[in-house]
Length: 99
Image (cartoon, rainbow, N blue to C red; front, side, top):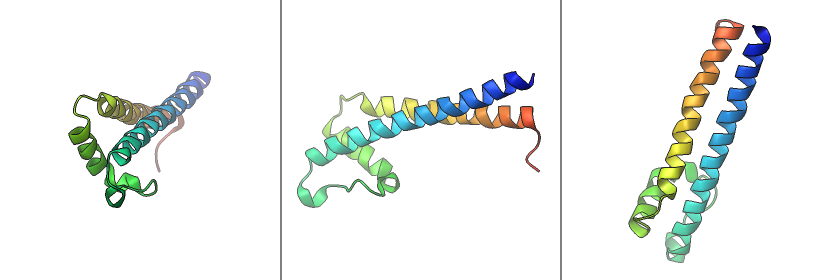
């Protein structure tokens, strides 16, 4: 039982961090495309962009309405959140309570 718990917890941890990393990489390609089509004074810097996530995605939707990258990014991000919740549940179920 304990080995199965470790495999589930470690596997879900690796999976959710990988999904989050891929979503992040797709977001930065979206940011690059938005900046490539924007005037220099309207470009968004590479740092602290998570605070401007929705505005970047909104601008990308206006510039590239047919692009599937936004859907891909959201798919990876939502999948990562779901697997993170699985990680939390498995961790609590296998190794005890929060307190």
